Amino acid sequence: MCLAIPGKIIKKHGSKGIVDYDGAQFEVRLDLVNVEVGDYVIVHTGFAIEKLSEEDAKESIDIWRQIGELQNGG
Amino acid sequence: MEDKLRNDPHFIRLLAQKIHDLSEGLEKIKIMHVCGTHEHTIVASGLRSLLPKNIFLVSGPGCPVCITPQKDIERMIFLAEHGLTITTFGDMLNIPTTSGSLADAKARGADIRVVYGISNALAIAKKEEKEVVHFGIGFETTVPTSSVALLSEPDNFSILSVHRTIPEALEFLMKNDLKVDGLIDPGHVSSIIGVRPYVPVSKKYKISQVISGFEPGDIMLSVYMLLCQISEQRADVENEYVRAVRENGNKKAKDMINQTFEHVDAAWRALPMIPSSGLAIRKRFEDWDALCRHEDILSDFVYEFKEDSACRCKEILLGVCSSEECPLFRSVCTPDSPIGPCMVSAEGTCNISYIYGQS
Ligand code: SF4
Image 1 (cartoon, chains in turn red, purple):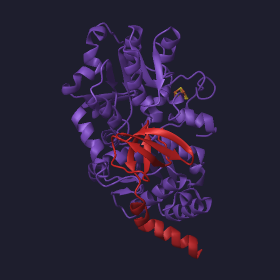
Image 2: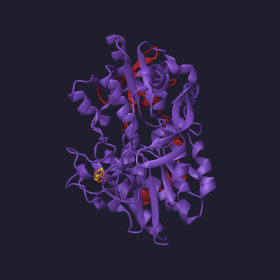
Image 3: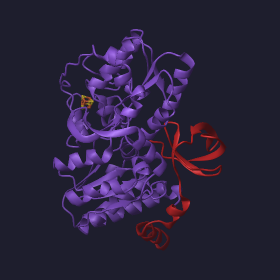
Image 4: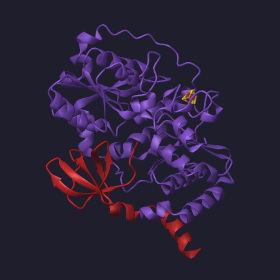
């Protein structure tokens, strides 16, 4: 089962790190990603598999914008 | 976009309204996803009840435990009964085969350990100094974790690979004309493989696809994006899950997969063989391939195929039947006494329908 929520890297030593989920902390392997402390990652079976990109997320697709406008403008 | 917004009921209602508006001009539309976690979100959040009557959201073969062939489970039981230590994800333990489950073998004294990931399996091998065989199940999201293990060339450790790949499965589903109008592609498989591997399927079968995240808002937005494509008669691969899926995927992970695995034709439980949909360990790493490393033991392994009773997992995995339509559902088949794999795994459609009391 995929864990949908991203965790924040708070420690890194070599190919291992500690990921924080709102206070709950777990050891993760970092072999599959290029990340630094402070980055948010998606974790699958104990491995970080991708870094979350806030920029890409903000850039967003037109539909998000349309929906956002709808929400603001009513 | 903020994750909060994705869970905001107001936002989801707005999307539902837009979906209703769009669907008025459309015929019956069938959308298939191929991910146990998507099914979980859909059922747990009651998303189907928010959709118009002509929009059907069905689940396909997206539960890795459910599609693992009986033969491989029996092979693992055989290895366990020959004194090897077996590591497996917990979901696999109770999957029934015609000759029992891994849990049955464990109860008889076989050394079968549940792990959360392959790192735990490696740690067990290191500690025990006994031969450990890890049950390598899962799609592209899990495959690179097996690659990391293979590349570390561990002692007394091997993997039985039943890894499977999603684009090849989608190709198979489309080829078999399941009358699906749109596909919701799995988010974390796509984090690894990227957007491109889905493009040939869209081109060849004129099918619209959207890669989706796992929040309720992600899935509703993906449905909306698919309906936009369908009403504009476009067959593109769009990415809703931009925050975790790049166009080319995760290069590091893909390189490791390519180094360690190669595509082979492979069986999926309840489904026919799907060309090129399996990943076998490359010859260079055969020392860590349980099929080679334990060839001696496995040469005595015989497998006799028996049809899965009256279980309708096949139709469930193809999205042509719901759990409620299976006569065994709830009456005979329950998570405590499962008849088919779809009732065991937390990612199995029947299990999810049972737990949440709806289909
Ligand atoms: S309810 Fe049980 S028997 Fe029926 S399809 Fe699902 S797993 Fe198979």
